[in-house]
Image 1 (cartoon, rainbow, N blue to C red):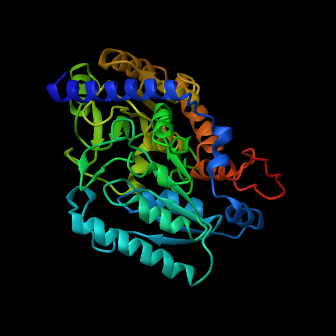
Image 2 (image 1 turned 90 degrees about the horizontal axis):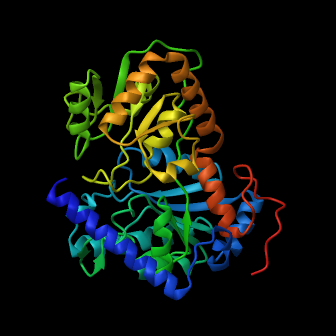
Length: 391
């Protein structure tokens, strides 16, 4: 383990323990069923019941966001999309104080301009403290919109770095939203301590993009991996090669380079096994849920990934997906699955069935919005005729 890995592990471990102690002292316990009690939900509930939700989505499209988040929201009604990347802003890590100032002014101006065409009941953000300021979110909420923010990177970056007067993670902005959607269950305590209202929901996958072939297709690869080359990943790929397992790799930093989403889906279902890594950044010990955890099974691929206790909330481990604990365990399981294609096929089909029935972005937004308005989650978008609970 490198010094950088040890440093990050120590920092996150200290942060986790500190927030856990503070949550216990404050008597804070995460309760998904209580999310609605802190949500400005009147207009939102009415719009959902009538099937007329209008959403303003502040989401920068890098490579997957517009293909997954926006279609799910679009099934509920009109979506006004604000993509600051398309407005000429640089990557968030390059921002200056002037970029922050200009972004917040433009975000509020675009939201208020969208109000001229009709009321907006939901402000949905995929935002961090690098860009948005709490006062901007509060100004948007004063127009009657319930505000929800998504964070998929708060396992190790809940705080992040202090820059331009705020933490670069979600710590500084969380309390300004009605609800904060986190894909890390243990982060819920941190949000509660900071005065925010968390809900734990994993990522999902859009079956309109990540879909299994209608008929069986021949395999082109024994083992493949799609994702960037960094951290533990090249070391594992090299170690597997030494053990007689060749991994075909795609993405930034690998010889094959990145591939478009259509090719990615093809690789998923033409590989006998799709490899996954759950590590955060350069760490092999800090793990979190990944979009790949749902996109690969949704595409009809057999998925073998790093062990993470939160995966057990989504799949029956070793029956719907397979998990490993280090390179030796991984090599053993890959050899076994390659030598037992019938068993591999059973796991592949079971994983796909689970993903298709429970892990679409439709399912995620249905649960989020049901909890925000205080009804029991049901089938995606089944909001009408539900009784509202008493506060």
